[in-house]
Length: 154
Image (cartoon, rainbow, N blue to C red; front, side, top):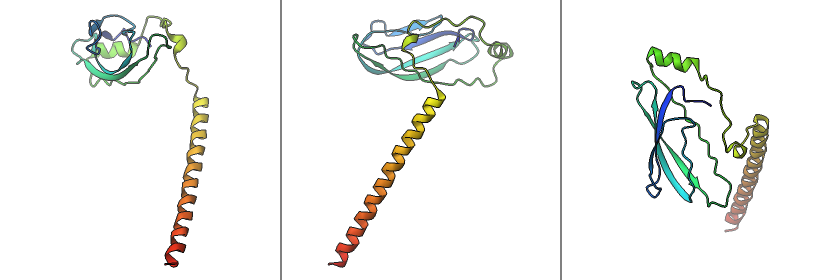
């Protein structure tokens, strides 16, 4: 999604072990690519084209794998709500993006979402959980019966 029509820049605070850990990106796609290994929390701040709007600071966990592995694509959805934006900014938001969305260079690594497939996975998982719960209940009932029999024999 093109967000450049309402975002002016994003400041990224990477782990201190990276060269130049504080970075400012002033154009789309407003992202930082790095090679490394490890996990850390990245803090980033989004600044809007309407300077009267307060910047928004978000945190995401980052996981980097060794260089010989596939790229790590970790998408997280954050929703930004503008409370009483100024009229001009509101109009910009309402109008939406005007630039065409270009294909991301790593798009072949992105997961595609299929609602039917996701629903089928959820139904299958619920069935597994239901069976496990039923097995646990049966085991508890057998143990309670065994306790009753043994307590009567005492």
